[in-house]
Structures are given as C-alpha cells and as structure tokens.
Amino acid sequence: MANLVIIIVSWNVKELLRGCLTSVQTALAADGLDAEVWVVDNASRDGSMQVALVEFPWTAVIASQSNLGFAKANNLALRAMGFVDPLKPERGWTRDLQWPARREVRNKLPDAVLLLNPDTIVQPGALKAMRDFMASRPDVGIVGANLSFGDGSFQHGAYAFPGLWQLAIELLPLPGRLYESRFNGRYPRRLYNAKAPFPIDHPLGAAMMVRAEAIQQAGLLDEAYHMYVEEVDWAKRITEAGWQAYCAPSARIVHLGGQSAGQIKVNSFTNLWRSRQRFYSRYYSGWKYRLARSLVQVGMNRKMKESPEQADVFHAVKEIWQ
Image (cartoon, rainbow, N blue to C red):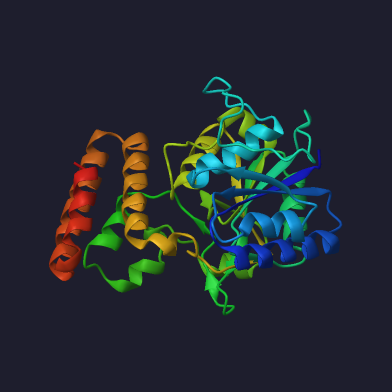
C-alpha cells in the first residue's frame, strides 16, 4: 500500500468531485508522492461514482447503497485498508460495501491517511508540505492545511476545541469583534502568514491528515456523528492519547465549503446541533454541560423570536439538548 492514502467521501457533487480529483492528480504528479486515492460514494444519484470509475480509473471506489454520513463512510475505507478499531470488535464487510474486483485489499497500512472533502482544490505542494512535516515530527498525529474560499479569501482551517465561549458568541448578542478572536477558537492570521507550522487543537475536516499509529491507538471515527463534529471528536481522542496536532500554512487548499450539506439545510442545522450535543456531553463535566445546555436553550429561544417561521426547527434543537 502507498505511504499516503487519500479518502474522499462524495454525495451528489459530481462536478466538484471531478475538480477535486483533477487537482489531486496534478498535485501528486507535481509533488512526486507515493499515494493512493479512495473515493467512497454515499449512494449518489448524479453519476458521481461513474465519474470516479470511468474518468479516474486509478482511484479505488467504494459504493455505498445508502447515505452513511461522513464518519461511517470514511470508516468503510479505513477498515478496507486494514485498520481495526481497538474500541470495538471488527465487524468485517457489510451490505453497504461493494468492493470492485479490480482492487485488492492489502494488509500493509499506509503511513498516513488524508481525509479530503470533494469540494476542495488541492494546490501543488500542499500534500507534500503536510506529509513532510508529519514525517519530520514523530510526535505529530494530525496535520491540517491553510484553507481559502473559492474567491481566494482567507478561511480558518484550524480551531481550538469548542467550549462555552464559542456557544455564547454564536448564540448571544455579544460584540461582533469576538467572532474572530481566540475566545471563539480562532487562531490569529499572523500564524498562517508566518508559514511555519503551528500547534492547534484540531483542523477543519475538509483536509485532515492523520498518522496511522494515531488511528490505531485512538480508534476510528465515531459513527454516532452522522454529520459535523466528527473530526473534532477524532482530534480530541487522538490528542488525549498524547499526539500533537499542527497546521501547515504552506499547504494551500481551496475549500468551497458546504456543498453537500447545502442540499439539506434544515437537516444540516439539526445534525450540527445534535453532534454538538454529543461532543459537549462527552467531554465536559456536569456543571459545564449544564451551562452549555442553558446557553443553547436561551439561544434557540432568541432564534424563535427572530425567525418564527422556523420555530419547529429551533424547538427540535431544544429537545435534543434537554
């Protein structure tokens, strides 16, 4: 197996997938990396799987019969590579997995795995920068990238783990200047501009490279997260196991953002807050979780007053956080 395996989970974003795979192909050739690309198709209906199979025959394609979400779909590929979750018994193949005969599952694990969103455009040098930094630091288990939006503007690609301040800034009428501050989990732009890798809590899951040993120690992604916060939880477990997380600013990747989630906006909103509830209840002590729950209740009440036509959605979130 190649030293690096890239996993791309796709759902009804055929054109974006084509652009992503083209950029990955160009970047790998420019960087001279030994890498494989695996595409997990979440039961797309727009021909995404055919794009990967026909136009990019060098990819390995896993076709799910249903939309499994981000965590479970990535885990399908990780298990196919040979990773076993130490926290759960190996479940083997499932009916959701169809493995093309043209690819074999080999026993040797890669050195690292990159989770990459299909709505990304990888710039030449980005993959090499991430891989080289990880290779140079045996204590580093996670490396993130320097992201930008489609128009070239800056996008935060790394964050501190979410806490009470982040909830308060999002849900309460606090000064807007706090949004870009460390209170809201943001790292200052000067760190990105300095080009030197800097320590973080977690990268955005759009481009997240993870060392194989860290996966073996911390386990696979938590499949109870259908969408959102999966990478935050994974990074939390990996760093709690003693590994360091860094952002590599010289690794530049364009992230268009929210393309799959934008297809189901109401479901995306409730999925986000369901995932947040799982994360906060898992990692915060009693009083912190109770305070977080109170903040969410107050915040959703405010949203009901501001947008009464969506009261049912906000009420559903309140129920999740009861």
